[in-house]
Image 1 (cartoon, rainbow, N blue to C red):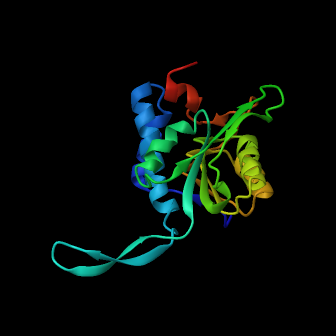
Image 2: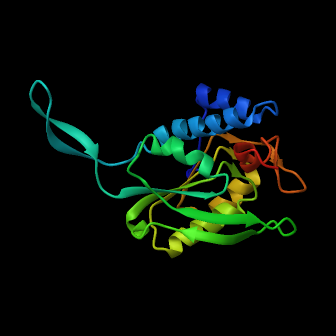
Image 3: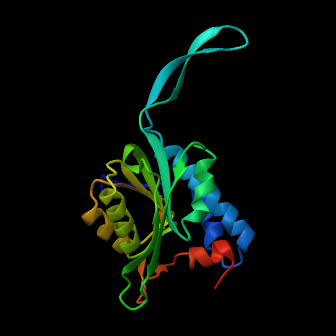
Length: 209
C-alpha cells in the first residue's frame, strides 16, 4: 500500500523486541516508547520543507537551511499516545501539542470521544496523530475525522505496532493520510487486541492495570 510505511531499521526492531517482553519494567518501557517514536519521526519528517537564510558563523557569513512552510502539531490519542510525545518534541521542540481523548467500548469496540483540545491554528499546521497501537483502527479513524472536521489538510498517523485489520480499516477510510508503523503483527484476537502485540501500551507506560 502506497500510503503505509513500515520501519525495518535494526535499532527500531531491537527496541520493539524489548517492548514486547513481559519482563520489561514501566520505566524502561516508557523510555523505549519515546526512543522508537524519535527514530520513526526522524524518517517520517524527511519531507519537511526547507528554506535558505543568511547566518554568520564564527568564521564568515553563509547561507544555511532552516525549516519553512507550515508549522507542525502533534496530537496524541489519550492516553497511550502521550508516551510518544517527548520523543518527537526532542526533534521538533517548536511543535504545538493537541490532545484527543478516546476510549474503546469493550462490547462494540467502537471509539468513544471524551476530550478534544487542539491548537487554535491547527488547520494551518502539518499534523501527526500519535498512538502506539493500531488495533481495530476505530480510534485512529475517529481522530483523523476530528482533525479533518477542524480543517486539517496535512495529516499523518504514526503508531508502533499495527494489526492488518486496523491498517485496512484506516486506509480504506483515510487513503489520503500517510500511515507509519514499526511492525505489522499477525492479527487481532477475539477481544480486539493485537497478537502477539505488547499488551496494553497505556497500562505499561503509566504502570496501571
